[in-house]
Image (cartoon, rainbow, N blue to C red):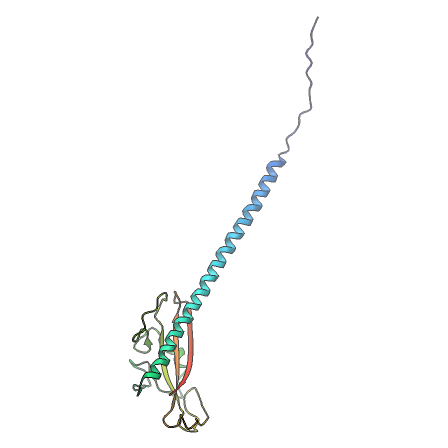
Length: 192
C-alpha cells in the first residue's frame, strides 16, 4: 500500500499592505495638525507679546505726560524757554520758517534737549528699553483775544478768571516698551 500524502495547495494570498498605508496617512494627518497648532500657538504668543509691548510704551508715555503736567502745575515762574531748547526741554513757539513739529524733530534720546524721567521723585520705570521723556512747548499767549502764535492758534478770549498772563503749553511725551521698536507718543495742552 502506498500512502499518498495529500497536501492542499491554496492559492498564495498577496499581502496588499493597506493597513500600513492607512497608518502612514493618519500619521501624516496628525503631524500636519500638530505643526499647525504649534505654529498658531507661536503666532498668538508673539501677538500677545506685541500687545503687551505696545501697552507698556503707552503707559511709559502717559507717566511722562503726567510728570510734565505736574511740573507745570507745581512750578511757580517757569524757567526760561529757549528757541533751541538747550539743556532745558522748554521751548518757545517755533519760528514760522521752522520745518516740522518739535515733537517730530527733537532727539528723544538726548536728555539735554528733552526732560528724561526720572527727573525728580518718580522712580525709574521697569520693563522699558528707554526711560520716557517729555518736552514742554509754549505755543500761545492766552492773555487776550489775539490769535496767538505757534502751531496752536487759540482765537478766543479766556474768561476773566484766567485772563492776565495766562499761557498755553503743549506737553509732548514719548515712551518705549521693552524694545525701542515699540514707541508711543502722547500730547496734552495745558493752560497756566
